[in-house]
Amino acid sequence: MLSHEITRLRKNDLLDVNSTFLLKRMIKWTAYLTGFVVVFNLLGVRVGFFVGLWMLAGGTIIGFAPMNTNGNTTAGIIIMVSRPFKIRDRLVF
Image (cartoon, helix red, strand yellow):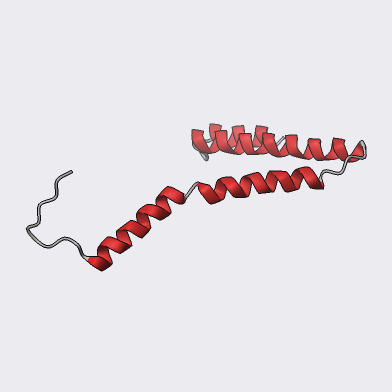
């Protein structure tokens, strides 16, 4: 039902192609995850352990993803503070 509504919004030019794709994918994966939890709960399997592992993996990915950006930011701040270059200095790459 939600997918149909998103398609209708796309046809009326209220959503762009990328937003439509992203919303449909999020709805699909949310439905898969909900179904996974419901089925395992019905079978008597505790999903708390698996959810914990999933959160640990996600946290690790989110933690390591911005490392390059943080390093570049730190390097830029160090260069601005220490001012190792003067006007008319030539830099060779």
